[in-house]
Amino acid sequence: MFTSSMTDNNFLASSYIGTGKKYRDTPEFVHAAFDELSTPPSIFDSLYLPNARLSVLALVAYSLPNETPVHPLPDPLSYFSKEEPHAINHATTTLLQTLPIPPAPVLEKIIRLAGQAWLDGYKSVVYSHTGHDRRCPFWIIRH
Image (cartoon, rainbow, N blue to C red; front, top):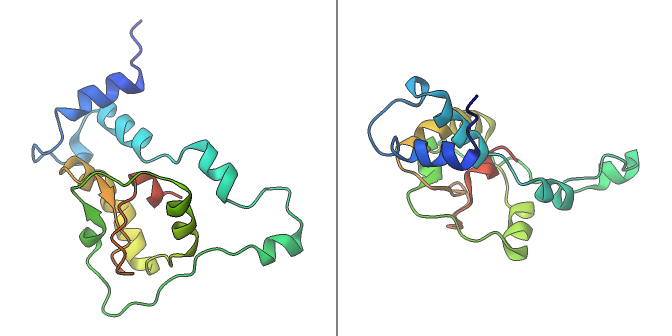
């Protein structure tokens, strides 16, 4: 029985990038490659999300980014960049903890468009509603 690894999926999926294909019509290995690319590293969650054992008071005091009220709502495609993401380091994670998240309707569209954007050749995500040009990996959408 043949089982493919994520490296195999990524290699096979690379031939679909930028070809004009629709994400919904691609084979399962393309979806698997995007799922890996858009899954936050487990270390990130353990370092930057509240611990599941926090007391209620500590959880209430924990600071999470707020939603940004932006009008007019930005184009969801403006959140994707064809440039590689910047390296994730302490400065990046500190910035991500303080940047406000996009308005809910925009965030929902970004999440829905992410697979297709990746297939169309976009390589990173930017917080276009804030004016910051820091390029982040796709997994930031799921974080």
